[in-house]
Length: 82
Image (cartoon, rainbow, N blue to C red; front, side, top):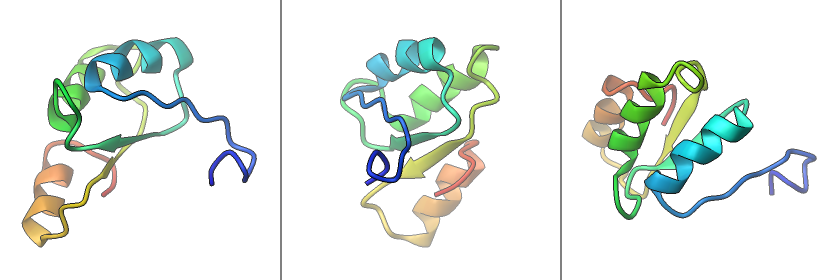
C-alpha cells in the first residue's frame, strides 16, 4: 500500500535485520511490529535509540495487541506512535 502511494519501503523480518537496515537507509519513519522474531520490538527500539544515526527516526509500534495497556506500554517505552 505504501509503495503504491509512492513511498520507498524497506522490509525486514527480524529485529536484528532492522538495526543495520535502519542505519543504512535512515528512513523517515519505521513501522515496527512488537512481536519480532529474535529481539522484540521493544529491544530493537532501545538499540535504535542508543545509536546516534538512528536515534531521531520516528518509530511507530504495530501490533495485534489491542488492549489499552499494550498501547500505554509501547508509548511509555519510547515509541512515537501505536
